[in-house]
Length: 463
Image (cartoon, rainbow, N blue to C red):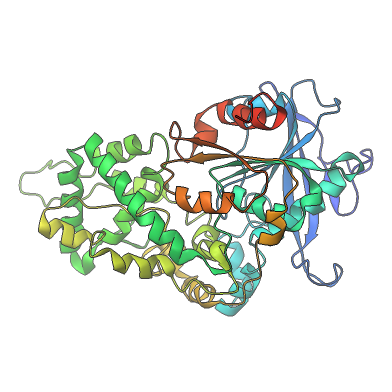
């Protein structure tokens, strides 16, 4: 139940909820009614809802704490749901009033799911609607919330993880007045005009190969297991096997497991244990060998296309300013001389390489949850008139304190490209480390956050 009358901070476009508890935390929900399109008169634009969860340490509800906005990775994923005071949230709540904002289209922010988007009708309508769900409007939403939530509309600290870091650099470009300081964890984007997607994938594919080599060095027995699965899929009728919820698992679809399995902590182990149960046992002698239901279900559970289709639909657009991506990852993959050709790898006796953070056009044919968005995905891949996401001149003259954790072997955000952008952001302080993978914020407890805050508050000397 929401207290719309007794809370002074509730207004027609902001409804604040009552406080509730998780172990060692106090939380309350906020819902904001915002324009879909900020470029036109606010009253003329359709409205959507943006949800933000306020989190403090238990007993600190009434304390005057500085505000910190957390921007989640993605695109197209909601914020974590706190179940206890642990990890980076526990560390952050010691010093801040934390705001977990579900980016528009995710979580409780007018979520765009396969079912909800069925209301939009044609592919053209879907593509037209989705153009409002990139970093520029995520920042507009953040500013809308800040001036209504922070006392006297003061600036706040922003913590951006992965794609949330991309959004934070957009924030630095277009609304630096709202920022007290910025913390980036594995989230420094390429900022050049046009489409940076080709440069991103040319840089990322070699790192993905490196991660594959590390994986098979850890689990050499999986070389043959993965080859066997690929061979079975290729020789099955239609070149694959049906998935439990519809769709089709093919060799190239199998390779997408690298998206989660190769780039974050415990991913190698999870991938290995999944392949341990790739096959059904032969209970009746002479029965045909078949891939287990367990494995097929685990494959579907590994991916989030059925609950978070925005990731696949908008992924390449996050690199576009005034030009189209034209299925960049798919095109650049053809430049690798067959290194990622699974069937060829089997024939040549090579390890099958998994792919990384790439979206391919055939995914909208093989995965049931995405199939209805095939035409819209093609329209978005060809769209050229994407508005700017960064202002290099503003970044060159940045005055907002910025500290960034840059992971040397990051599979998702290329180290070289991140360093090129960092050189454009005046005053940025970098912590370059190979101690963590892309998921360092989650994996390191409060260590990553503590290090970055120390760089900005004087506890970590400049030299």
